[in-house]
Length: 400
Image (cartoon, rainbow, N blue to C red):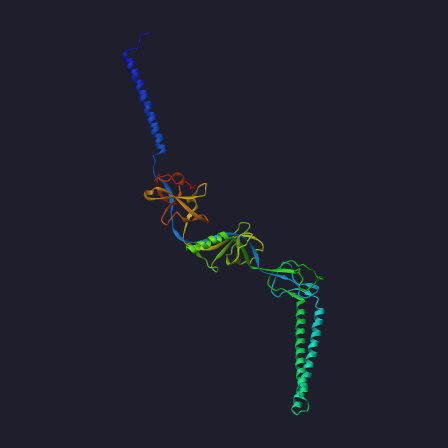
């Protein structure tokens, strides 16, 4: 086999070098392309809101139960047999409406006897008056002794006293006769009857015949822990919060099924003592209840206005993160559009916002969008939250 010539070897060697150079060039271009996809470190776009201070009404959601505005337990004030029930169970009754009729025969007889006693006493008074008049004229001429006249005067006064006593007895008898017809002391909804026609009832018995409840308006009693009350008073004493006048303090209700009660109520008063077993204070509010949607004993959650922060700072909840220990932090855009991390105090949640009492001040730019792309010290491109990103810029991702 003939050996290759020197020219053939030179051509082959050149071809190998050219192939290697092309391969290296391809690798460099591939790496450069990969690097171009990753992008050089730059300013990521982030959405921010400007922190503002404004009066904020401080409220608290408290649990409680409804109770009737007025409750009247119907009991007889005289003894007798129930002859008639005059109401429909579960119906609305007006004040003064008849409820039960007790057999009035005995009480009617007592009234007639008292009327006769009054008539007899009035007759005695008339006789005593005539005697006193006669003796007054006779004593002037010494036809009778002064002692006889004094006896006549005393007899007249005694007869008048007897007449007054008889009239009082008649009044009492008439009252008992009226009480034989039991009427509603208040307006409201009456419950079931505990007795039926023919039952014997006694005056002032322990068992109520029925119960009437006034449901419009209706009370809502909620409890607040004494610790929260002390904190609220401390904030008011420091001047950070101002009090809400009871006449202007509104209350809203959330019912057991999660729905919101349409009408708002007014805070009436707060108990002056703390329940020793629960460590809570009772607050009472009153609500209109024309449709009687609220019934006594229902469990509700009431949102009560407790005070006003005249310079409150509310920030979106997506702009606040918490560490495993519960410490709240926020990312703000500092000078030169550089990210700063702030430790803040998020006092309480107010809807979809946090009330911040420390760590932020009016004018700070709080980052709420694109938090997953940044870190403290990174340079960013600020974009007002909700605004469209600049052309060619990647949109800010959802808040974490």
